[in-house]
Length: 397
Length: 213
Image (cartoon, rainbow over all chains, first blue to last red; front, side):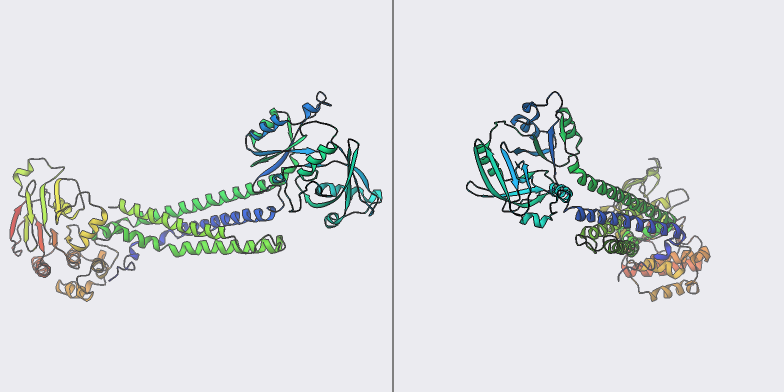
């Protein structure tokens, strides 16, 4: 015959502390809700900002330049980065990699061909493709190609669209810009060559007109009139562009970091920080509620001390008593966590529909990590109580 | 199962007790089927001995073992098993749940390892004259009635040893005899032993061994 806890139940004085018990349930519910919502908002931020961030695979990409001062003006040797500077930057704290932004050493002119009368002098630069945020497969060039693919800074197009109407020029969209055939003319050393160029992508990260490195190396070799070695800008790949050690290193070297580029990443970090803080607060509330509940359990056990001691004296196993005693609270725990989950789900659905207007990056359903946290919390609460009750019962022996 | 007592002495007794006692500081073995009477005047450590044998206290020197297994330092689960299956007790201070009914007090013990069906509770209660008290709260019963409840409770489980610590202190002779008769009957049914400690000899207990504490 299985042992019945029903006969034992009246011996445990649980009813006299209803207020503190309910207070701990409500506290636990609020704490769990806060924690779950924080995790979900954390995920929401990742999903919302993940696509637009300047970060790529978790990295910040920032450019550094040397500060041009009155003393160094006109001395390219002092204002450009050389091989040893590059090696120094690669070895700098928190820097994963560094690559120079190489520029043209010949004259380049761009004209819009027959479409509209637009002609300008231009600069071209090239950068290791690992550092570029958008690299389409056709971004390559080899000797003999008369077509040169270009990755243009999206800010440049915006700037063009600002001044174009004033100059009687048409404004162009990104889609149109990628379809516009333009001509670039390279000249130097008494030679001249014209290439058909087309914009293959826009970069949010690199403020430049980028061409494949193979093209720039070839063109510098053929048309280059100067032989300056070194580059004015270097791109750094780092886990955190605001890292104190890195910033101290750059300050020490009198290098300037382009902080605009990490602003978006910082905003995201700030938001994540806020929700991390909220999550920690939620955890604290959960901790407090569990503690309150453990006090309640201790109180019940203390009040029922004589009965429990007598049950143990009669031969009741402390393990059995502890298990049965703890099991009584599982339905309540499940109810509290499920209620918090339901509330978090409702809030997420409202946030998605009403605040984010059903943006496709977000999901109406809670993220799997939120569910997992809820399950882990339930298991944690049950185990914590079981251990506590067992310990208290063994003390009665 | 055997009960072995070896060089047993409460830590708060001086060694001289060993010379005047037939139990303290001796080597003793008790077998199933034996009826052991322990005559113990006040202050000789009668209740201490019963508490040591039941594992309620461990402030003693020497060893107590059941079936070759020493109980000192035994895990709570081990004691629970021993008390459920092998050793039963009627304590001098009874230890009942005052807010529970007589029936419930007995049944709480019975359900642990039922030797008798639930109906047997009524039968035994009737035999000891407390049949009408089954639904009364224990706290409202007289001490004599409570003593009988404790006796019936001890008989609800299987056991090899039944420990009795002044079980008739509040019972008249007639009720004591009835209760003894019932305990002897139940003990024989199990082929078990009784260790009966009291202030003086009790005529109606047919002991097979007699010790002076």
